[in-house]
Length: 274
Image (cartoon, rainbow, N blue to C red):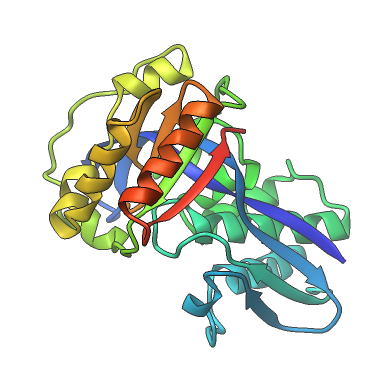
């Protein structure tokens, strides 16, 4: 049995530059990953199974990013899927954390490990790119600037160990609808240099349209931003999960207690940047 982690993705900043003729949007984003997320396991048997606290959202689905990743790998490498793939779903679905993309990427890594294929094999990247815009970044799960659709990656120095609190208010937001409501204004490029300084100087251009769809996101951001020790509070991706970076583990713990006390129904996860 082999298990591969699928770390959650954060967009520390996400700048939407323009709509492209192919229907996608030209992006500049700071990708970062945290120490927690889903997991994918290869075991005996055949087919696909799902468990974990958010499994219900995928139960009964025969077509998802994990099964598509396995099928794509088998097709490109002309190799069989050698067992049953089980997804442990710990992250909320449609939450801006790249959960499905991370799961697909973990599936590709898992099958590559089993068959002795190097992670830098260009065919593996091609598989990832064909599955979705965030999957290439999730394939490597390292801090990077993403351009194009997000698939043009330039690794940058990270800030490993930085305390992070993730909060989701229990709403799912449609990525397509959020992008559709983007106002079309290019507000400029990412700042270069230190990761956290660049993140703080940046923005998430999808926050305003996401707030219009789910105003509760604003409540999450306000609560996180008010916590002592929070150095950055922002929505990730197209929402609805928001994150806060903290200057200490103690500050993060206190913030978690404050959020859970104020909103016991919200999902919270204490973690750190990889």
